[in-house]
View 1 (cartoon, rainbow, N blue to C red):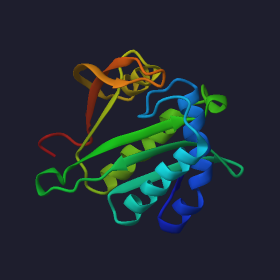
View 2 (view 1 turned 60 degrees about the vertical axis):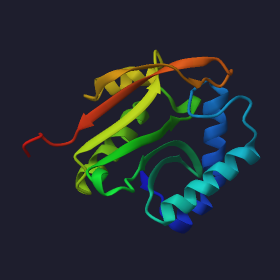
View 3 (view 1 turned 180 degrees about the vertical axis):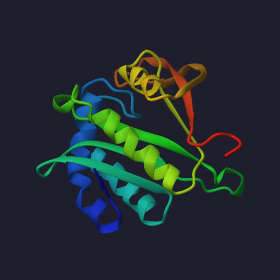
View 4 (view 1 turned 135 degrees about the vertical axis):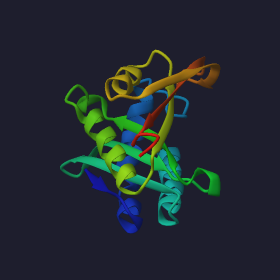
Length: 173
């Protein structure tokens, strides 16, 4: 896994956009409606590059040669009362790279980096009933609840989301 900072993230925008387009085309609910055009995906990732440059976002990518086959991010806190927590965002694995443990490795990299940076709590939301739920439960994340009709899936149908959290250290530690 490679952490993408500044210029490295900016130079990977096209490859990250290709991954995002594939993820949405595969039906994953990651905030976009299908079909997602590449220009829109490039613009979205370019905005993320700015967030990474100013410390609001950390992004890691998994490569197969020059191609990005997976990514994960941590949205970092911007308020004084939330400095202990971060949100896991945009865990994506290319459809032809799935089933080989890449999602688990990306998740572990984000968790380890968050703990090393002093975060004690991570949270996320994912489409209820999606394969991602199995990944998070298997990695020790705790289901906090479900919000009905939370977001439109790529096909435009409103779907519930499940909220998860994971403590990175004991509450007393």
